[in-house]
Length: 260
Image (cartoon, rainbow, N blue to C red):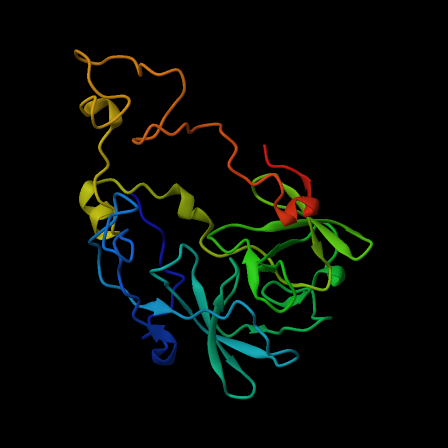
């Protein structure tokens, strides 16, 4: 069992005005039926309202604390604007308490600062990238993730995502410089069942361990082969390799190169 190094976090109570209790649904629909298996239980947690838009332009802010967020893999930073307002933003990997950040179209090229894409040099790494102007960051928000700026062309910036996909985004959209905090999150080994239960994950039963009426892989004497030509879900739907993206999706024109 391994864990993340939390020494970088500030020992401080969370910002009370930005806390919110989310109702647990445990994978159930409005009628109470289980629509997503393997969810339920888990430790109590409060949602932190993170500001993905960072709409306060040209107002500098000081990083007061780096905090843990139970609803996301990345760490968050509590910032204090010059006008006295406080909020949470996504923390970059090298963000330090006492550091200063700013949101501006021509902000200095410093990690954590937020500026429009066309003013970011080619080759730079960014996170919390907007897909639509003033709608808030959507790309690269999980721990350790980042997007590379490849080119600026005719009103669009070409971005290389961590999946290998290359897509166009309007160059007037905002993005934050750097890489998201907690890059070692993907190396964590949960280690035991009890820790998964504390995270709200209930047990998963293998299809091959079920009866034939419960799963396409079920039945047989001892350990048997799958018995079906293509991999299938519990409900007999083909999975593993089937393309699920809509062929006429509006954003297809923005994708230069599909992910591998």
